[in-house]
Length: 224
Image 1 (cartoon, rainbow, N blue to C red):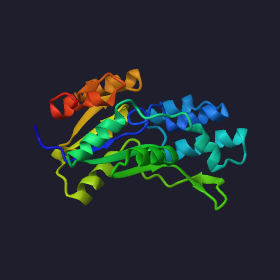
Image 2 (cartoon, helix red, strand yellow):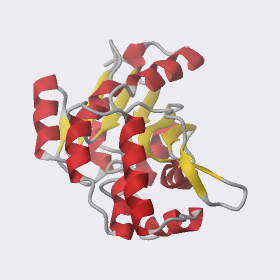
Image 3 (cartoon, one colour):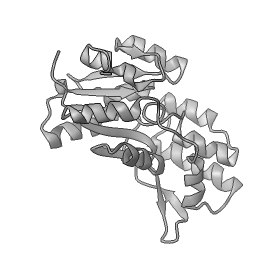
């Protein structure tokens, strides 16, 4: 089996035990973006258009939104079982651990800090000096082209694609799999994701314990 030099994780539903950091905000404001989400998954709208529509809905409920409001959405979000152990064991083997997420940077950054990952990138919002939302940040991670960030990670660190494994829970996460690299589907988020993984011919772990990705990556059980 090819040596693994880096593992790139999605965050929502993979390292964080939640469905979506964007959906957490919709739950706070009681808004429903299911129609726009369906269009987004069909690639009919861009990340920028999707986020702009989210903000429009939230501001219809609460005109002024503070960073603390958003942070409160994530107060109950826990790490996925096994996440800490997997990251620690990967790093103990000298493997770089990164998060490539199109989720909200306030949550992704806190998960990155908790797990002490080596690198992370996510999307989010702009805030004024008093912490009030002014709009979306320019998109750093294109949900349908997350591989651009994985390729950048490989280039910066001098890694061959064959030494990189990506782990995600949705169809768009398959875009992390740059040519020559590997991908493991973890805990598929929707029936559509399971179908996308099957079509792509990638190994799938139908579990909520991240330690179960060890076997498809390394061909062995997670060390006791």
